Length: 571
Image (cartoon, rainbow, N blue to C red; front, side, top):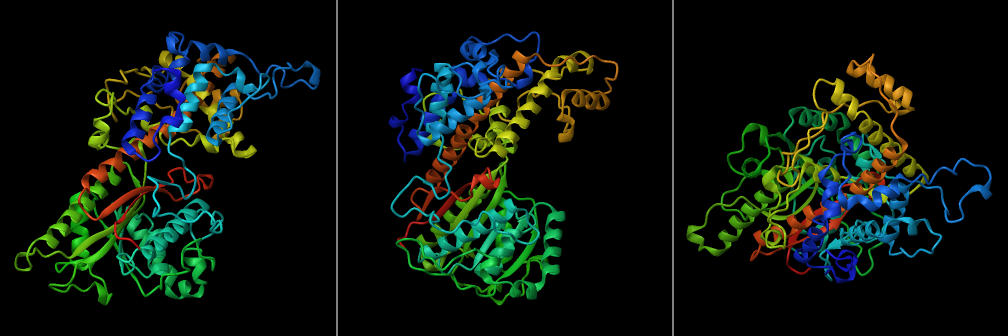
């Protein structure tokens, strides 16, 4: 792959999922990136480690001590060609962020100029080909794309009882988006039913009931979660919900309309909430919805709401399927259920009245935010024919390393001084744990890191390092404290654990940073594959699909992209 191919972002089509997938696949298949993603940081700390040929430039650069003057109080002692005392890993992050902003120019004295050229090209390619993550952005874009206006008042600091600021942000923003979605299309405005899949403590479910007047089925696989959600609801009581102003409970709407849109609000009629515990896959999801709305509802699924009473021969009830962080393969399973229900509803409209099958409900739309890619089943990537038709797709696999890194949000690491310090601490953890590898292999009773062929093995089949386990942050205060904690936990009281070599430390810092910078491209590839798959499965049916950025990643909501399926009818 040539340098022009790597960083020619202007040549990457912005609106075509297949072309965008091809561009990302080419980049992730580049020898430098694929080698970075095939190894674990612990490998670099082994005395037997041999630097891959593709790493030569950055491996030597990373070993240089750019901080040797950082503690000097005399400015005259600092090299004139160093404008900052940033370590190399932080310089890479700042360059990545500059590329994301489109401001990668640098003079001869700038720290960016010290980055090896091949690494700069890789970073430019990764920054340009990953999907944008700004709030309100949608892909593919169109004149009638669904999004929340960026001019809305910020809801980042919204507080809701019992929720962390991150969860409150997600619940409020998703509710606001669903309200706008329901109001934006004539075929959605009368939707009164929603299924919250993987509802957990049902924070979103309750907000949809209380703010939008929806009848909600809250599905979760954990009986502990469902019972806990029901207890929260019972303890809150309807009186407490009514005692709070509507805009504090639900969507945070202001009186300001979005530009070019009427200032409509959905009237919150009385909704209801039904909690159900079930193993969630395509078949059980369809069965649960049918039981909830159908004629054979068991006692645990029956609701006192009159609108939920079954009626033979009635028009199928429109249902909105929602999921806030559908873990691993739950997202594809929800989509499979949507496809099946959509196809069934479409068949109903095509047959004569005399032979129609009884259809209780129809999927009117979906808003699904996925997460936990490391929990995906191997068969859930790739999903689309479009991906499989890409050049190089046949031999490409997402390894456990890819899926773990897909959760990284490097754009947030340099946002404030506090986030930089948090990143510095996280990098320290990686480096110090890697420094233990040699010792653990010698004294741990088993190899701490078994290497496998990462290119030949697929999702959940990679050989991973033996885990030391989670340590309290206080264990990383200094090296002596860390060693003392490890000795106590691993039974290595009499074993010498040498301090890491400074050159090795810097190399692992750069290695891990480059891997994390590749993470958003991996997530983009997964999202685009799902987008193309949905388009293929719904071809010929009256739906359209897009990826919409719902949450502000600065709030801690790293997985901020929703898969949005909506009717094709014009508003």
